[in-house]
Length: 426
Ligand code: HEM
View 1: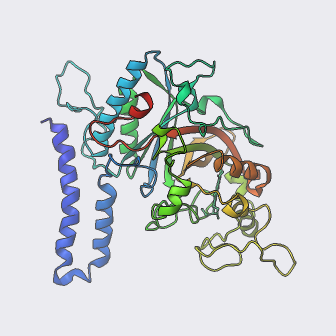
View 2 (view 1 turned 90 degrees about the horizontal axis):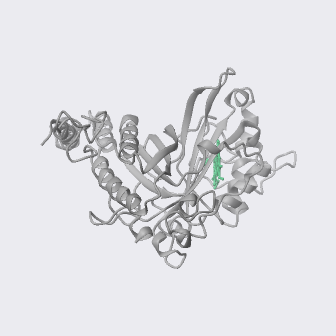
């Protein structure tokens, strides 16, 4: 066994021992006094642990949103279908290993012969799994490229729901950071672990795929589980209050997972991913008054309660009028326009991250929200919601959509004999 594998495994064992140790102490006499510290340490243990890679659905969708993101879109550069399928198999094996906290390859970063490049890049040595999840998706251009070519004999297998997104009012998309034949979303509680995973997938894919664009994110902007506190986006507002959550069983079947009969069969149990890089003009936002900011969102900045209500999780009352006879929640507010009541009941599972990509050379932060949403059918969910928002949302004055992507994320990898894309290419 290589030294690298030993050291990562030791780190995991230590993380596990931390949790077990906490349980042991909790049974002792001093447990009450130390309760807070113990809870914190147990939380840290869980945050460092592993998320199962195999399952009915891909991890990284309803998994409680981790703290960090590295998202990548690839172009396929080979014309050889067999080589692409082979890569998807190699990626799957590496992903199963890395999400378990192991090196990307079986030899490891330092376990091989000195004359050969290692099969892991090494920067995650000694780090625990950090709840790394790797979620794969297939873009429209994998099925037919921009020139209309069916490169891999997949054109007939393209899902009708994997639409080319229409142009939305105000879009300022940059093609070089939009689209992609394949994508991988890496989420983890340690940015180094997420970056390590994407870097190694890119390394393994050399000659078959090339990185088209990638995005780092921090500070999740959604809760995807009722157990998580709602985080804040860079406008300072709670984000993710009215999100679809892992515990929403029936709603997930209705709004998130592709159901039998939706077609095509290879997508049953999968979900469609829409990404939008949304630049926030934070300098202008920061000069607007608190009351204006709250009217734009439709919620209070402190508690996140809908305007006119007291608690974050109260239902908004869109019919309520103020003393001036005007709606308490403005007609152009974000939550009114994005709410299921305005969109034929449509909902999304949002899973975005904040980003700051340095500054723009004009004295402004290049900051915003990397919006990520999963859904059963973008034609009935993202497209109508975004059409409405793009036309009327008062928030648009402070936003610019600069990148866009849509991907079909297949169901989960069932076991060691399964791999990413098996049903699609099968
Ligand atoms: C930078 C851009 C955006 C910001 C700052 C933002 C911010 C927010 C905030 C603060 C909330 C209220 C809290 C919550 O329920 O999560 C919210 C709700 C929501 N947003 Fe956004 N959002 C952005 C873009 C989008 C986009 C592009 C979409 C979809 C096309 C979207 C869809 C939704 C939905 C569906 C809700 C829940 C509405 C409800 O059911 O009450 N948002 N957003």
